[in-house]
Length: 157
Image 1: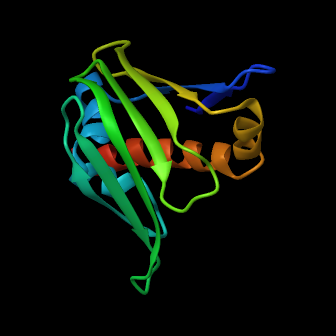
Image 2 (image 1 turned 45 degrees about the vertical axis):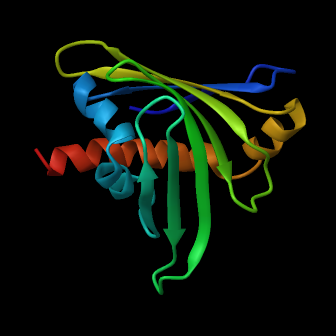
């Protein structure tokens, strides 16, 4: 499976899709349960979900540290919508990061009993900011993270 990223010309959004060899409930847990999120978010670095309030207007926060425990960055946001096994709508921002806050719509879909799909729409302040993100290792990183979600559940079932 590979994560697909659609970056339409002159649009302030990315549409990210990925089919997973996971049942819908496990795919959703990978995005909703703090202890699971920390397991797949960052492979070499340590990422922990410091806060995760799965409700409308709930806050979330994740910290990433290097092997020595030094804080590299903190990602924060607000949950705008949280419907179990269906959707999460949230803001996303890296504190002191180069990009302004973005809006993320994540929709979870059952394909079969054992497979599911994530569709994520990310909306940016401008086309140029979206294009700057695409010049980073973002695409490679999100595909690797999605691979780690499947690997996590294959080891822990």
